[in-house]
Image 1 (tube, rainbow, N blue to C red):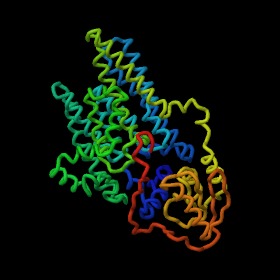
Image 2: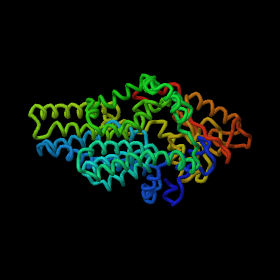
Image 3: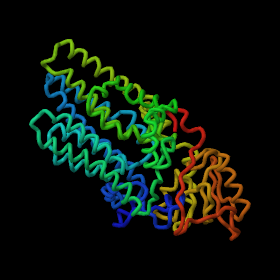
Image 4: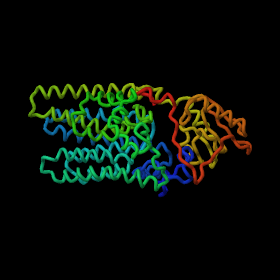
Length: 472
C-alpha cells in the first residue's frame, strides 16, 4: 500500500524474502489486486498499516445500505411495513454476520473490496442498471484474479432471469459477464501475474485432481467421479457446506443467485490445502453477500402481498429463524467478544512485541514476528522471521507461542538458540518475546538471501490444520 501511495508498484520485502521471490517482486505477481490502489489516500493521511483496518471497516459498512436496497427490491411486492422490517433485519444480520467478524479478526485482506462490490453488482442487477453492473464486475476482476469466475456465474444468473422477458440489455449484459469474467480470470492467471514476476501455477492446490490444470482435465475425462471424490475426501468439506447453508436454513438454495457461489466454493472444497476448509479465515466474507442476497430474494417472493396469508406467515417465521440462527452462530465466533472488556486488551505477548519494536532504531534491518512486522515497515528494512535465517541486525520473535509461518513454538525456540550460538546477543526478553542483536559477522547455518534466480516456495501447512471447522 505504501508503494501505491508513492505512485509506485506494490513491492514487499516481507513477501519476497519469505516465499523466495526475486528482489523487487511486486505483489501483483502474487494476487492480481490493483483495486487496492484505491486505498492509497489512507496512507497519505496516516502512513500506518492500522489505517487499512479502518479502510476495511468502511468497506464492510458500505454494504449495509446496499443490502437494505436489495431487500427493498426483493420485498417490492410485500406490504410496506413488512418490507421496512425486512430491510432493518437484513442490515443487522449482514453487519453482524460471522463471516465479516472472522474477516475483521484475522486482519486486512483485499477481499474487503469484494464484499461491497458483489453487493453493488447484485443490487444494480435487480434495479436493471446494467452500466453499473459492468463497472462493479470490472472492479471485482481487479480485486482478486479468481473473482472473474464469480462475475461469469452472475452473468449466467442474469441470462436465466431475462431469457423469457423483453430485457435485452439484461441478456446482453449477462452474456458479456458470462464470457468476460472467466476470460479476465484466465488472462490474469496466465499472463498478468507471471508478467509481474509471479510463478505460473504457484497457487495450484489441487494435487488430488492433477499436477496442473491440463493434467486435471485429462484425469476428469478419464474418471468423472474424481471430482465428487475429491469434494468429499475430508470430513471438513461437507461440514463447511452444511455450516454455510445451514446457518441460513438452506434458504439460499432456492434462489438462482446462489449459482454465484459455485466457483468459489469449488475452489475450496476441491483444494488440497487444509487452510481452505475451515471458516477461520477471510474466505467466507466473499460468500456472505451472495448467501444473504439469495436468502432475501427467497423470503421476498414468499412475502408478496398477493400470496396466501399462510405463505406470508411462513416467510416471516423463516426469516426470523434464519436471522436468529445466523446471529447465534456469530456469538461464539466473535460477536460475544465485542462485549467482553478483556477482548479489547492486548495479549501479553502482543503488547510485549510492541514494546520490543520500540527499541529497534530507525533504518535498521530486521527479521520480525508476523504480528509486529507491519508496524516496522515505515521506518525499518523488515523481513519476516521464518524458517531461514536472513542475517539481519535485529531479530524480534516469540519463543513460547507459535507464530506464522512456524509450525510449532519449539521451532521458534530452536531458532533463538541457533542465533545466540552464532553471533547474536539477547537485548530484551519479556512475556515470551525476545529481541536479539547481531554482534559479530559469524554466518548463521542455513543463512540465505533470495537472489535474482530464486525459485518461489509455498508454506508448509502445520499438521494440526484442517481438523477443526472453527480453528485455522
